[in-house]
Image (cartoon, rainbow, N blue to C red; front, side, top):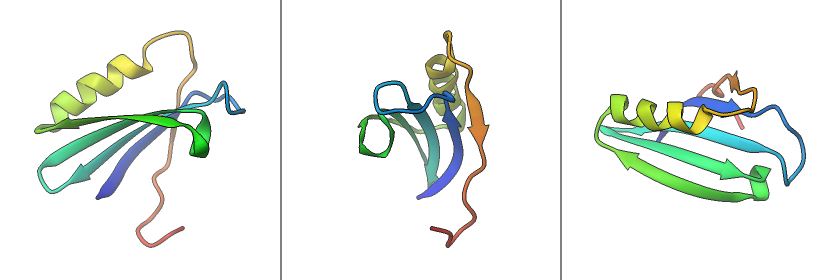
Length: 78
């Protein structure tokens, strides 16, 4: 599975941090919505098209937070 995009709400701390990940695996698209950082709780969504996955990403990023797109790690890093 390849991580394509990662967004972060710019907040630190287990209670405030939120992350959204977009990943691709063959012809399947996966969105992960995580609350609470690395040790947090995740919710997963699966799609057959990139467009459908991006529709959900846009919905998840809507709201008062100031979301930042983070660079994906190069293959083989970390």
